[in-house]
Image (cartoon, rainbow, N blue to C red; front, side, top):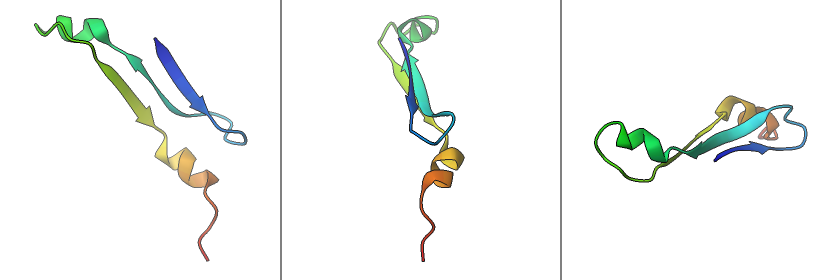
Length: 51
């Protein structure tokens, strides 16, 4: 499963990630896993300027 987070006006995904259950099994640890990343620069562009 993969996901992306969109916000109106951003023009691109601000966060994305997914489940990586088979990844750890490749390294000897058969456990479920999830990961995500955030586009902090794109998020900062959406924030109002501080006065």
